[in-house]
Length: 115
Length: 111
Image 1 (cartoon, each protein chain N blue to C red):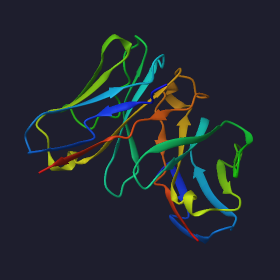
Image 2 (image 1 turned 90 degrees about the vertical axis):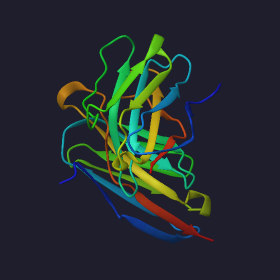
Image 3 (image 1 turned 45 degrees about the vertical axis):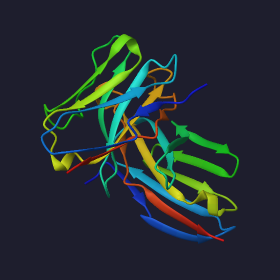
Image 4 (image 1 turned 120 degrees about the vertical axis):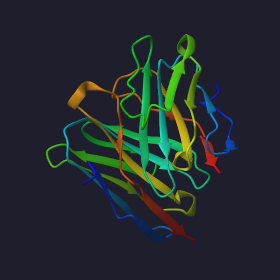
């Protein structure tokens, strides 16, 4: 079956604009994760969804960042009033369940560039 | 201090060499992941460990929970193994699914 799909693959926008990034997880995967990878930096956890439970938003860097997961499937990460430091690759991953013994399957990411 | 430390940061090897990448962490964990990130950016999960040793093809991962240390070994390395290898841990504190990542080891295998 299809893997994790992210769109767009690249996004260039001006500082101050809002952006919306999309993630389609693998069908049947109940857990969904968003990560950020800034240039020269390691991966950074942003937010985690598991089924209908309240998401773990502890990694979101500011209140300009928000994420939704509709119907337990597709997720969107929204960044409002973008800043240059938001430039990074945003990665989505999904797993079969929220247990520590389940591997995460990653999308190819969205490369976001803020001018 | 980063909770997850990897060494070396960069590693260059000749085809056929045995490779070891190390990961040390400072917190109690329920699982440790090894990930591979290809030059194009795609990330693949290689292993998930909570104890002992796992093997898949030429790749072997080990973990010592008492010493808070894991190693990833590649036998008979090949240029296609060139990638960034990332260690990530799932801390037990807080009961969340929040992975904490190392900064990665960039491996280059020359023909």
